Image (tube, rainbow, N blue to C red):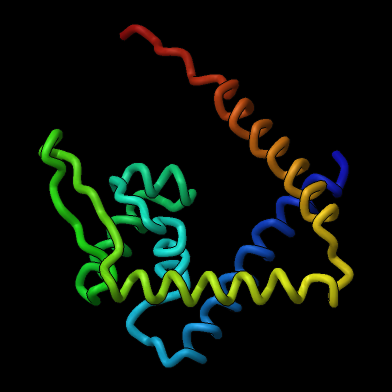
Length: 157
């Protein structure tokens, strides 16, 4: 087996952790201490939409139990409003409050600043697009690989 595959898997995880550390430092620099980096990115991903916790899980690739906990904390701290769906009482919808929208806008400014700094790191838009294409292919591969995993046969008693 080639090490390149394992190196990429490891790199993806490290990059994600580094990015979340940058978000954490940004929040601290803004004097925001009642929300963490993952929650800040969740607010960014919700944006102007109203969605269910399940949709947020799918859209943001967050783990289900973590999403529920983080949504609860963001509601408690005034960043989100959650309401039962009128059409499906089992479903809970979330949307940003004014406080949540302000923080989402600050995260947007941070990401725009990063985008403007990329040329200093000799990273072009073409580079990002090429990496994006490759990562989407890898994502599709993993989705298909997960579908192809053989389930243990069911044995009759």
